[in-house]
Every structure is written in structure tokens, then in C-alpha cells.
Length: 335
Image 1 (cartoon, helix red, strand yellow):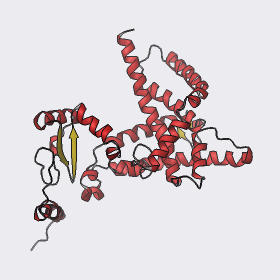
Image 2: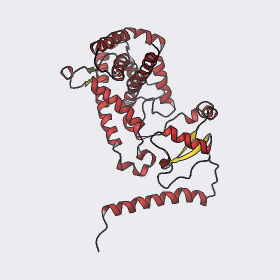
Image 3: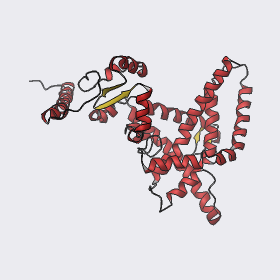
Image 4: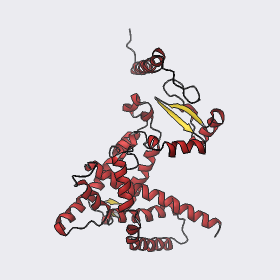
């Protein structure tokens, strides 16, 4: 008798796991008499839940479902229940009245592999580490005093932007790319103290990255943070990495880790050289001082330090560029 192929064995294995999951959840709850009152929603399919109802434009899919099931509804994404609210009143309940209960994001692969195991503010669960990050950003990067002290950086970068745009007169120019470059230069200089990337290959050292490469890393970080990764919603398929996203996340982590290691090593060397005369000049210096504080409520290890340094560069660059791009487009409509 011919042995079954690997495909048949794989399908049998998946079906067995799905059946086991069904028996231990749905039937288990029925046998124990758990009758919880859930919000209305469509009946989920086995394994995928209601993922088949979410199209390429999710907010339109949710709007169509809202018209059928109301302001609050429950869906099932793979193995996880998801509650969707669709009115100002329900949004206030979630974001304000019960804000702390809903403050944390789901623990996805993006937070694990691209944010140093949920060590930045974006992916960190609500708690001491998140509050430390928020306090750090407000006091050391975005306080009025700090913002005023960085005015010379913004002036220099504005002149550089105007010079580049002037040189491109008469040529097709993607404004978004120029704005991303502009904000990346601004944010990195304000957060890191100086430029740690080169403009060209000739000026690049073995430990720095090229400006275009850093821009690509930031773009990849945003893309991977928003993709639909099957392993996040169907955990028992995670090890297969069916879409290849986790592989890309790990590759991106290595690039950012080399960059952060170079920045931190440079700051530590400067602090060691100045010794007792050292004064913190930027956010990297402040974070390294916090990591050495034995009385800090949250222990900052190496990953924690790098996670806190990552958000200003990634988040600050893209959101600022998008805001300025939107403002320019509105001005062009009504000069």
C-alpha cells in the first residue's frame, strides 16, 4: 500500500488540531454550563472565525456589519474574540470611562520582534514601563523648554529642505519623500544628539547606516506593524510563518539593533570621557542615566533602553511627514 503524501498528513494534522480546539473551547463551555451574554455578531466559521467578512478596506467592512448588528458587536478573528464599537457613546465608554482596561494593545509578533519584546511605548502594555516612557517623552523630548532649545536644528533643516527643493525645480518631485527625509533629520538630531547616518556610501562607516537605508527601515517598521499576520490570530499556525512577515521582522530587528548599538556605544564613550563633568544633552543620555538608577520603579535592561529610543525616530518621522503633507495639499487647494 502506498504511503500517504506529506500534504495529506499535514491536512490530517491541521484537522486534528482544529477539532481538539473546538472540543476544548466551545463544547467545554457548554458542558460546564457557562452562559455568558455576548454582544450580537455574525456566526464565526471554524478556524478563521469572521476573518472572511473583513475585506481589503476594513473600516467599510465594519460599517456594513454595524448597520446589521448595531453599535457594539462581537466578531471572532481566528482564535480570539474581538469587540467592535461604532458610535461616539460607545467609543467614550471604551476610551474614557474604561480607558485603563482597554489601554494595552494585543501582544502581536510585531511588538515582539520589532519593538524589543514590547519595550517601546507603542507596543508596551499599560503599566509602569509605559508610564515611564510617556513621562520620558513629555519631559525630555516634547517639553516647551526642550522644543525651544532645538530651534536651531529646525532652522538648519528647513534651509536644507528649501535648498533641495530649489535644486529640483522643473523636475518631478515626490513631496512625501522630501518631507520624510526632513522630519527624519529633525527627529534624529533632537533625540540622538547628532546624525548617525551618512548621506552617501562614500561617507558611510561600518557602524552607520545610509540615510536612504534608515528611511527604508522606518517604512518597513510601519508596514510590519500594521500587516495582518495569520500567526497573531491563529497561534497554532504561527510557527509556519505562512506570509513570511516574521522573517522580515527579525531581519528588520537586526538592522535596528546594529544602529542602536552604535548610537549607545558612542554616547557611553562620550560620557566616560567627560566623567564628573558630564551633562545629559539629549534623550539617549537621559535614558542611559535612567538605566543606571537603582531607585527606578522599572528596571531598564538593554532592550528597554533601545525600545525607548526607537519610538521617537519611527513614530515621529512618519506622523510628522504625513501632517505636513496634508497641510501642503490643503494650501495648494486654497492658496
